[in-house]
Length: 450
Ligand SMILES: [Zn+2]
Image 1 (cartoon, rainbow, N blue to C red):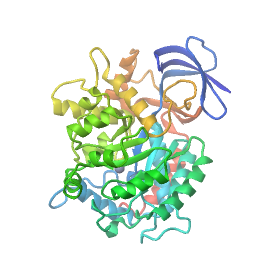
Image 2: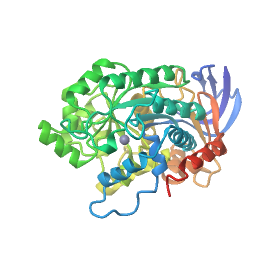
Image 3: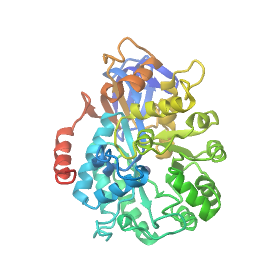
Image 4: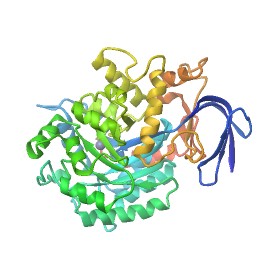
C-alpha cells in the first residue's frame, strides 16, 4: 500500500485539506481520509485526472499543417483529403512513436486516461499486416510506455458513405468485414487484459461507414464495454442520412440500438432539438471535442441546453491539434458564450463555471470509457494531477477559484505533477520519458512534414 498526504484536494464531497490517500498495489484508491495528515506529502492542488474520451493519436503529427486555405470550399471535407494523403505514408513504427508522444503530452496536460478511437488498421495499400491487430497493439505499447490508462476502441469501418456506398482509395487502411474486425478485437483484447489500467470497447465508425444492419450485428457480437460512434458532426452527413433513411443520424441510432449507458455519441454537433432531448434523457454520454470542432469549422453544439436537460458529456482532444484538458473546457464554455451572448453558460446560479465543467467532464468521461467510479474515492484508479499553487494564475486562491484559474487562465502550464494508478509519470510539468519520446517522435516525422 502506498500512502500520500495531499495538501489540498477536490474530493467528491468538495475541497478538503491534509487528505490521506491510500493506494493498493494494483493502483486503485483503497481509502480517503481528510484532515488526517499521514503519508508521503504532496504539496499543491490535487484534482482527479480527466478522461480524454476521444483521440485519433496519429493525427497529432498533422497539427498545424492544415492551416493554409485550400482553393474552393475549405472545411472538414478538404481537411479529410489532406489527412488521407498524410496517413498513406505512416507505418507501424511512426504510428507508435506519434501515439507515445501524444499520450505523454496528454498526461502533461492533465488527462490521465484516453479513449483511442482506432480506425487505422492496415498497411498503406489496404492489406492486413501479418498480425492483423498490429496497429492496435502499437497503441497498447504507447500506453504502456507512458502510463496513461487506455480504453482502446477498435473501429469498424466498411463503407464510404451513408447507405453502404463503396469506400474510396483513401479509406482502404480502415476497412474491415465482421470477421476481420473480430480478429483484430480479439488480439487487442488479449493485450489490454495484460495492460495495467487497460480496457476495450468497440467503435462502429459512423453511420457513413456502417449500415444500421451492421451496427445491430456488432452490438450483438460485442455486448460488453464502451460503444463509441461519430454522429451529426457535419450538415452533409445529416442530409445524406435524411435522404437515405428518412431520418437524422442520432434518431436512426436510437431506433437501431437504443441509447444505452455504454454508448458515447461523438460530436452530435448538428443534433436536432428532439435528438438532443432524447440523448439528455438517456444514460448515454455525448463526447464533445471543442478545440477540434472549432478547428474544423464543424459548428457549435448547444451544450448549455443539453446540460439543463440533464445530459451528460465528456471531452476529447480528437485530432490533437492542441492537447490541453483545461483549454478544451474553456473552448466549450466560450463557444456557448459566443452563440448565446452571455457568460457562465454551463453553470448554475452562484456556482463556478470551472467546477461544473470539470465535474461533468470527469464523470461523463469515466462513464464513456468504462472507467467508473470517477474521482478521488475508494475503488477508483489513483489517477490525479497536482496544480502548482504558486502559478501566477493560481496563487492566493482557494476552492473553486483554483479550478476557474486553471481552466480560464493557466491551462496546462499549471500542471506540475501527474500520477497514474498511484505512480508519478509527470514531474515539473514534463513526462518522465519526454526526451526519449520526443527524439523518437522527431525521427518518425522526418520526411513526413516537409
Ligand atoms: Zn473522431
